[in-house]
Image 1 (cartoon, one colour):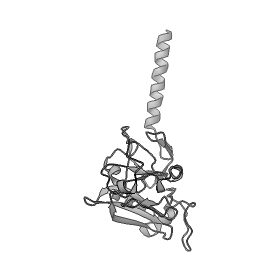
Image 2 (cartoon, one colour):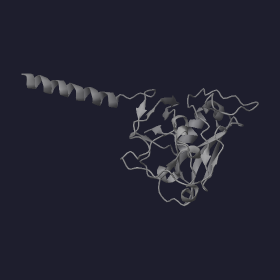
Image 3 (cartoon, helix red, strand yellow):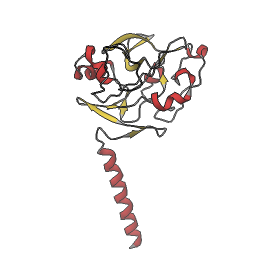
Image 4 (cartoon, helix red, strand yellow):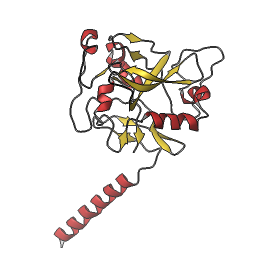
Length: 223
């Protein structure tokens, strides 16, 4: 009888765990393979992470390349990440910067999530009133350099931070002033689509010519 009760209790626990996994609602937190926890927010009918990706591993456990000097960064041929200005203290707030080769793997996002396509970015922006005004609605109300006439409201809850970028030559630029987000959409053999926010503009900009070995932030959207 005790054995039956134990098996029944175990069965109930398994059912409860399975139920929790199936009943995710946007606004709940998610956890990546490294244990990093992310808040989520609903914009239109899309569910987005509210923080930049921080993982050191693909979702199958494979380690990404890291600790990369400028010379190596500009010649790298595999998925890689770095900390802005090679300072690990920036990771806690701003997350990591990744090259597009990490995006290409289709394994950089937590399972059940993915790096948004260019079309999914466009859908987000359209839901916020279009490119000319969406930027202010996406930017956090803190960390950004102030600029006359530009007021960040973060009314979308997206909470974009000025994480800066890493150029394809390996140099870093403009933390506090801008950020860039990869899409999963390839433009050609050298470039991919990305979207960028600036402290001096209320808009969000779309680019087709992001060098695949640049270092940009990643936000993930629910499958």
